[in-house]
Image (cartoon, rainbow, N blue to C red):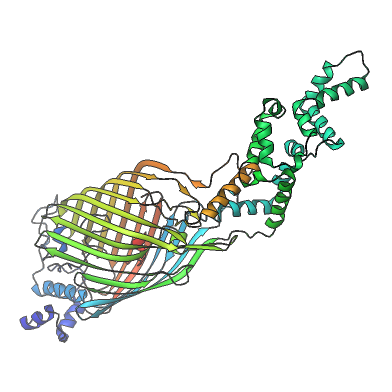
Length: 630
């Protein structure tokens, strides 16, 4: 090759390549054994495993792989190709690839376990990306259709009370489906007793019926004179019965029009009166007197209950929680500078402007640093990513974004390294309480293996984060994202990447296992609306009274503390089908934080430059612009 031509090509000027070089590029095999090309220094500071890139892979010419294969003699090793022009061409091809335009399309699927309609998530995205060389950088245009599905929320009271409108909406839905709980309460022996209106045959008949059921009448009958006739003994037994404290109380006043709380106070605070009630009836009376209903009389409260049943007849059901949309973004990269702006998928319930700007730099040979300011979608759930609506109440909320900054640095001497990063973000969403997140990460690592075609790194990583508030719930005002007040994870990550030129294959495997601990504080169902929270307390009391829950369940997400094993596994591979076409895929499995997640993706990338590119040191996985919010 003419030295002047090679010099101009390597300088990447705008002069066209000679036709001879183009012919040579087309004829050369992809896996030719010349000198490996230089690796771009524009890669991220941290790879997918959380470990920094090895120093040898971040810049400078790669070493020729002349080490013997274990178990193979030096004589049997294949001699390097003598043609120097092939090595120059490979370097030229890689250099041109850095500034060539490309098109890529892929599909990624993500699945998280959880409760249907709430934490459960199935996420399918189809990222489409075009990169065009503009000046010394690249213009990046991306369109990403997305389909989310969480399923339909369970309509039982216990599950429905933890979504959207909360206990009030769940109570209406339960009564719309079945009015039996109201009929059972009003028809109970205690409530029929509370409906009495004082001295009347109806009251006397009810008192007698209760005495027959609980055995009090038979007890008094046995105390009468056996010499009397049956009718006379019955009359004497009833006289004794009506003189008992509770029957005398019922016959002496209009209980049906007395406030329930006043009745409860008079009966439960008097030993003689309370003995006329069973333990279950005493608990039921106490429940009736609690909450906002205690100020009503038994007759009025009965009317309230049947009005609730009538109103619930028109209650709407919850719909499946899903979303479909397409996001767009435009970005630019030049050297260590990168910037982008776009939207969360258009068509989602809530749309947000997202984007960011960042820079990665180097000081000396061993220290790299980065800084970024961004606003990104929080993709933990359909609620946080898209926003949702409770059809029972018409309430809409969600679509959370995290706005803030992150800085990081890595010190690497080629054998050992250490890194640290610090971030702060403010989380906001439509009708969602505001929140703040702080995070710090520290780690050390060792380059266990470094050759021109493989790299193995292992180390120790510690991550700590905290949120100001627990907004992990799915009622109105919550964000549906993991937000512990304390979180600590200590893991041992391993990162292995490499390539096989003969097989035209590049791979990357990341694994980490460790221990995680987190604490979540209790949180009200409605953090943004005290009136809704009070109504939730009243509805929860009513649900317990009607037997929709075994015991009273306060409308508060209980706090929790958990400690357990954490794991994170991912593997990616990329095949070079031709000098211009690459096929790749990735799989991941983890239980990070409070969920288990599985993900997989497949992609194609095509270089528009006819010269193409050599095989990289690792797969260049096409990722969704929203992957950073996972």
